[in-house]
Amino acid sequence: MSTEYKPTFGHRLEYLLVWWLFITANLLPRVWARFRGWYLGNLLYLALGRRRRIAKRNITERLGVPRRRAARIARRNFVKVAQNLLDFMRLPYFRGARRERWMSVDGLEHLVTARRRGRGVILATAHTGPWELAAAYIHAHGHSGAALATRQHNQLVDGLLNRLRGKAGNRVLLVDEGARPVLRNLRANRVLYILGDQDAGPEGRFVDFLGAPSSFHRGPAYFARRLGVPVCFGFSRREGPQLHAWISPPVAADPDGDPEAEELRLTRLYAAALEAWIRRYPSDWYWMHRRWKTKPPHLTDDEC
Image (cartoon, rainbow, N blue to C red; front, side):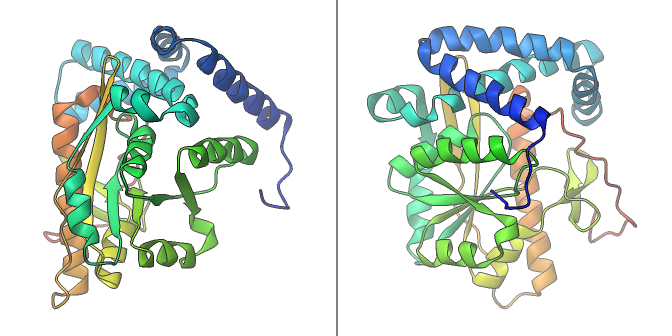
């Protein structure tokens, strides 16, 4: 934790609530935790009016579905987010036969192919399904790595969640620690997870996503082009008690191509892969985020 950080009363209360979730999630059998997630998700859907409205509006506008169907997708999304949270709390015990029974991953062979170059691999993922458990599964099957993340405001909770991740082999590299940890991870031929699906603000790269110009983080395409690192796309989903993830074949930047054009191409490939996954499994993506809040300063044929 930062030496300047002084937790507020609200932060301490949130920390205690997360601890309570962790303890109670691991006291109950997983089937009961799943039902508990159903109740928690529905409670959050009713209580978090602003997030509910954002989710329903996003679904209606981006998927072009009627309001009633958008409401059903949004409610299922809240339930799945709650169930994913409770499964995440069981992350230290996500191992052995239990791990193999809960989850399957298609495309692990693509990570093998990508890592043959010895430069590591970027796995561009998103807030879809139980991605944290998918990373633990991938680690357990011989592909260690770390996720690039920003430091959370509540550093008490942030530290607790990172310790849970660490127990399952999921390391976290913080953006404010600079590029050296990222470079060390890739030079050790490990996986670098980057969640690039949320709004990146005015400094992001604008590409079409679900029918509208959207700001995407530049990191995955930048590292891939600058360091010559292959990129795989990987997303996860929940179907009842079963968890599933998919990893794409690797793609790479053309070392002789124009840098800007290559980064734009890779970003478009990521956006297209994510859009296809969302349209196939709409209730698994994090719709309650204001994904399209940043408008492009200008529209050009190259960017939108």
